[in-house]
Image (cartoon, rainbow, N blue to C red; front, side, top):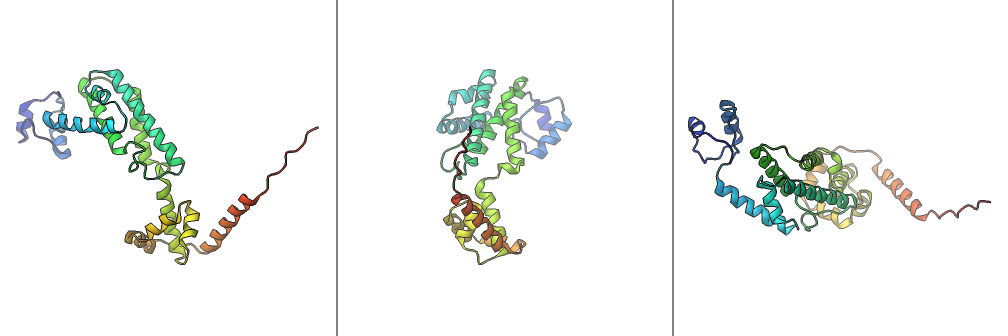
Length: 239
């Protein structure tokens, strides 16, 4: 349990077990820099939340006991192992996205990013409460998640294709769904679904135009067809 002085909460007009928002926490910490606490000190709420997260972990193939040991602050090796397993899930997501797969979370293929982040933060908070350094695997996991948020490379293939479709339609509204789909590398039914969304049309109307966009698409299609038709060169004989 975090160190906590009842008087410090009372001085701020807060009950001992009352949660703090970010503004209240900053005020409390500035007033009592030596004291430590989390935003929530309600043990019942914490246990209920941990149990719900444990069930989610088990649904995605993670060991529920490993999770509880890792966030309980009593097993450093459990924290290291869980962080490593979560890194493996991050790598799996990256591989699937690179292969062009979409809707990974909805299809149950990967752990939701929000769940990975929540587990990582619980482990970090546990390390802080126990006054022990976080394992390197946890640090690497947190850095990987932050870089995925900031890096353009973390944008899914469908999102990039959708942005391209907006630009194409803004430049030439007569383009067919198949032409746009081919340029973005997605199925034409996906483009048809986008076009039914009013927000998609709003973005098209707000976008700038490129001239000769159809000529560019035709050229792209010609290059692609040329690649497919190009005959294989026979191996050269060496004497």
